[in-house]
Length: 149
Image: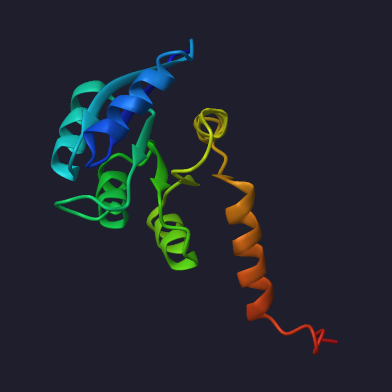
């Protein structure tokens, strides 16, 4: 099975670079590139991709709202957030919106490919650095002083 992918990022060089890199994966095909949410939805309608790689900073709608809108219409699509923002609130907002993965733009191609292959199997993928951040944040929210007898 070939995994069809739409790239949604406001920067052409990011989209073009990702498309070139992913072209080397025999089981993946970039079917479209979009600079905004409206175009992303049109590409989804036209090509029925399994995965959308979404930037958080988009010109018409931010990635969180775009993710919500896309998944409300196309719940089977897997959204991979690819962002420069490592703040816990960005990560949690994207995951709460329904994203299946959150990666930082400084990740290696191998990690992006691993994330794509993971989310199409109905699993969530977080980079190890973000997993550590989320676990630490979660642990800090609960006091271990009172084990709850």
